[in-house]
Image (cartoon, rainbow, N blue to C red; front, side, top):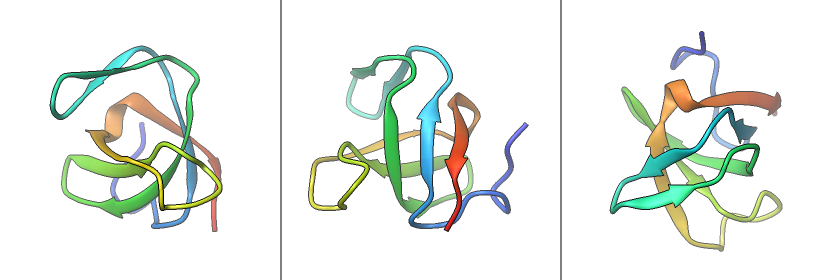
Length: 70
């Protein structure tokens, strides 16, 4: 299981299964996302893994796996 200490800003993560972001947005499984910030139980991620300029979603830490670490 992933903890707060494992995830850093700039990491590329992938959703393990379908999850719901804050605001009721459904995030499809296996979507690559870039971490913008890390909080206690949630991470803010960018919808474009190359930049942080795309829309930002807040999803639970338990719903992702780390693909690349910075």
